[in-house]
Image (cartoon, rainbow, N blue to C red; front, side, top):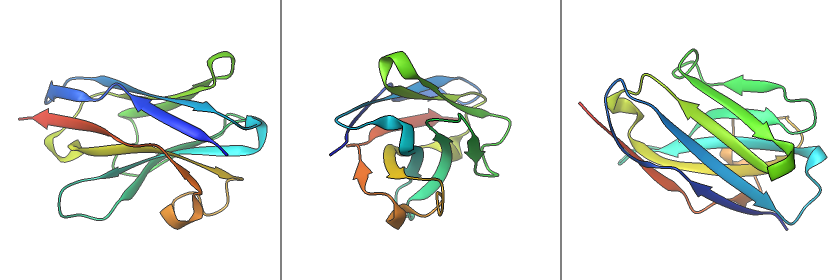
Length: 124
C-alpha cells in the first residue's frame, strides 16, 4: 500500500505561484511513477505532470509546460509541483497519484493510489 498526502493548495491571484507537496509512505519508491492530476468543476480529471521516481524523468501536459515544474526529494519521500504564472483556468482540485512504471502515465485509470486532493483557486 502507498499512502499519499497532498498539501500546499490555496487561493492565489492570477500570475502568482504555489507549490504543492505530496508526501508518500508505505512502499519502496524506486519503481513508482508519481503523477499530478487536476479536476475543475464540471470537467473530467486531467493529467498535469508526472515524474519517474528512480530516474527523475518528467512529463507535462501541454497546458502547463513552461509554467509548472515537478520534482522529488528522495530523502523526504515527497514530490512537489511548483506552479508559476497561474491562470484562472488552473483552478481545480489537484490530486497526487502513484503507479508502477511510466506506461500510460496520462491516464487516471492506470493509477492505483491517490491522495485526497488539495484545492487550488486562482482569482483573476
